[in-house]
Amino acid sequence: MFPFKLFIAAIALIPLAQGQQFQIQNWGNGEDATNYTYTSLAAGRFTLDWILGAGGNFVAGKGYRGNQNLVVNYTANYNPQGNSYLALYGFTSNPRVEFYVVEAFASHNPSDNAAQSFYGYHTSDGAQYELWSKYNGNLRQYWSVRRTNRRGGTITFNNHYKAWVAAGLPMGSLGNTFIVVEGQQGRGNADITVGVRPTTSIVETPTPITRSAVCVTPTQTIGTVCKPRGAKRTASFIT
Ligand SMILES: *[C@@H]1O[C@H](CO)[C@@H](O)[C@H](O)[C@H]1NC(C)=O
Ligand SMILES: *[C@@H]1O[C@H](CO)[C@@H](O)[C@H](O)[C@H]1NC(C)=O
Image (cartoon, rainbow, N blue to C red; front, side, top):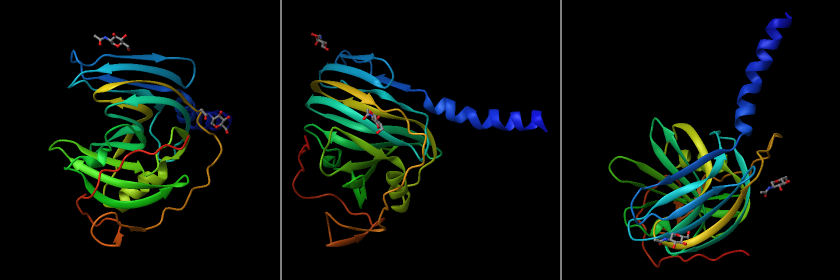
């Protein structure tokens, strides 16, 4: 019996041990216009400096192996100019999806893109988030955009995951999930610390099934697609 029990215990510990290690995301599109410096510091801390020309693009940060129950806290000194997001970010496979929980943005709200469709609101971690999605022909992108931007706090990833699925936006197998800064032009700097992954269970914030609309009708059931219209929303920060 003893060797058998030891074997089970070892299996159980592997995902936990791996999940505690910080994973690094550091992608730039390699163009001359992509001038950024990513510095990985101890534990969950990293810094970024960027000066991007037109066509420059990077996504860089730190996080964990994918897990639907991930709860991430972070602090961010985030000073962007131009197009930039501060987000929880990752991919799934089967289907291949790039997803963003946008905590803050600079001059461009991802929902301003005319190709985006609106899928409703949901509530998580003390604020409303808007669900958006677009498909560029080979990649589906899902967005959950915080209506009041912030630079620090806790993200209960499962609330966003379940809201996307409830909206008819299926999630596949999760890859790594990171707190990132994306820059697309302009300049900025950031000093971000991703918290240690909690080992205790988390009480979830309930995610309502019915959301009110920003677009066609005063009430909209999640999963009903409508196109964005109306004034561009600008960021307002909680400081
Ligand atoms: C690249 O960015 C750094 C700051 O991160 C800046 O000092 C440098 O001048 C930039 N180079 C160009 C060519 O823009
Ligand atoms: C994350 O939360 C833990 C527990 O409250 C706290 O000790 C830690 O400082 C937090 N980290 C960040 C980066 O906010």
